[in-house]
Image (tube, rainbow, N blue to C red; front, top):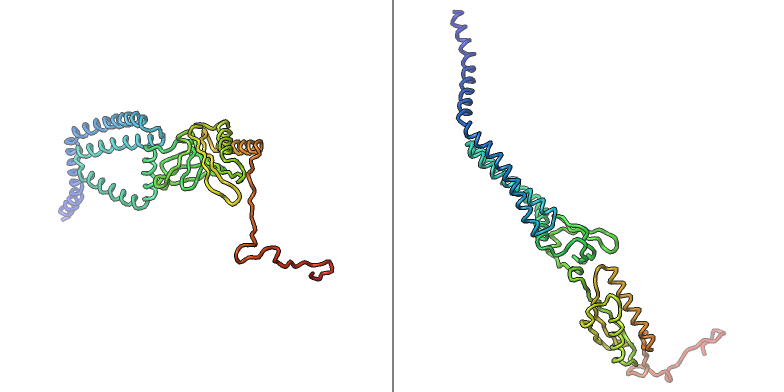
Length: 312
C-alpha cells in the first residue's frame, strides 16, 4: 500500500516537470527552426540602421537647398531616420512571424495618435503652420514686419511661435497659426519705404512756387531715393490752409532710420518756407455776426461792470 502511494506521489511530481521539459523542448525546437530567420532579421536590422543614417544625410542635403531653417532641418531629418527604422522594424517582425504583434502595434499607434491629435490640436496647428512658414519664408530673421497690429523686428522663429521684438523693447510671441492666417506687412524685403507727409500753406502763397520748392528741397535730403517717383499733390482747402501731401521714397534699413529721414525732411521744408516767406498758418476762426439769425456788433448791447460793481 505504501508503495502504491509513493508511486502516485511520484507521478504527481513528475507530470508537471515533464510538461515543463516538453515546453522547453518545443521552444528549443522553435528557436532552432527560427535561427535562419533570426540571422536574416539581425542582418536586416543592421542594414536598416545604416539606411536610416544614409537617408537622413541625403534628406538634409536636399532640404538645405530649399530652406535654411535649422530647426525644421533637424526635425525632418529625425523623422526620416525613425521612419526608415520603423519600416525595417515591421519587416523584421514579419520575418520572425510576429504578425499579430505587428497588428497590435499598428492599432496601438493609431489609437495613441488619435488621442494626441484631439488633446494637442492647437499645438499641432501651430506646428504645421511653422512648417509652412519655413517653406514659404515671408520674412527672415531681422526683418521689420507688422503682424496683427504688432510692429517690430523678427527676433527668432521656431515651429510653434514667431518672436517679434517691438521698438518699445518688448518681445511678443505670436503663434504660428495666427501668423499664417493674418496679413504680414514686411517693410524690409524691398529695401525701401514711402513716407507720406502732409503740410498746409497759407491761402496767400503761390502754389506753383510751393510745389517747386518742396519737391526740390526733399530731393536733396540724404536718404531720399527714387526722386522721379516722388508725388506732390494738393489735397484740400482746409479751414485755414491749403493742404498738400509730399510722398517720397527712402532707403529703409531700420525704423530709427525712417524717423531720422522724416525729421530731416520736416526741418528742411520749414527752413525753406522761412527763407521764402511762405507761411504755415495757425488755425483761423472767423466770427460772422451778420449771418441770418445773428446780430451785428453795432446792434448788440454790451453789459459792462464798473469798479463799484454796478452794471453800466
